[in-house]
Length: 75
Image (cartoon, rainbow, N blue to C red; front, side, top):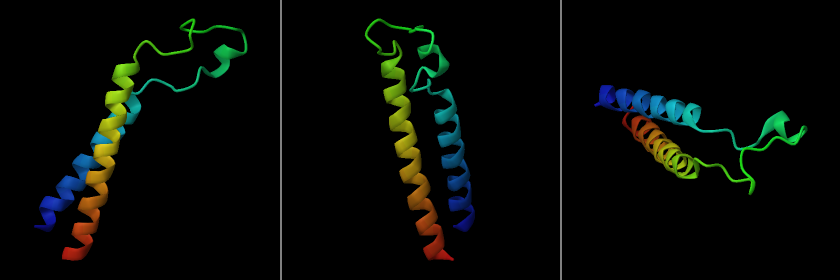
């Protein structure tokens, strides 16, 4: 049973890492100093992808939290 939750913790961690690295940056960075902007209205064109990845990160975080609490209770 402990092995199952250990594997679940590793999978949840990997999901969070991959989802966070796939997200587009929330700020423009140094491009705002020179006036460069990707969109006239300041919105990202990949808004739906970022929203989906946000939900994946939240779900992975909840899974990581619950699995760690359950594993702590088992040990």
